[in-house]
Amino acid sequence: MYYVIVQAEKAAKATEATEISLVNAESTYMYSAIGYSVLAILIILLVMVIIYLILRYRRKKKMNKKLQYTKLLNQ
Image (cartoon, rainbow, N blue to C red; front, side, top):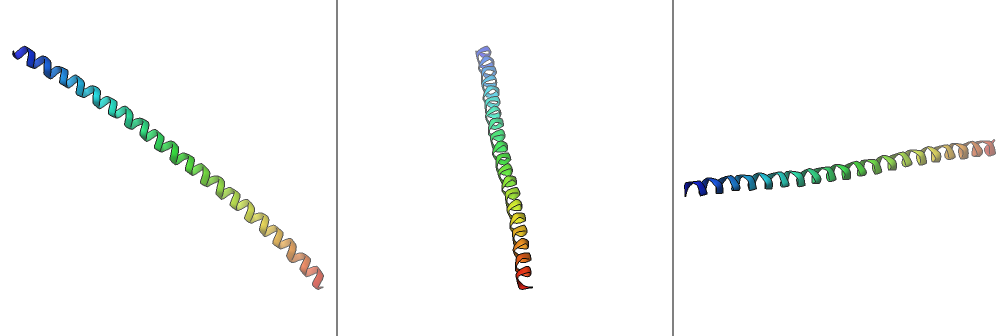
């Protein structure tokens, strides 16, 4: 009888260890997916900031050119 109890305990511990490793594997996949999502968001934000800076520079350049034309016309 004692032998059966010991075998059952060993089987329970092995099952528990297997379940723990499965949960750890699933959480690892989840964390990597979260990391990839954050990385994608950061890349999108970086591209948006670069586009904003380029458009702002072009608008500023255009306004300076317009200001020069108005100065020439007023002279």
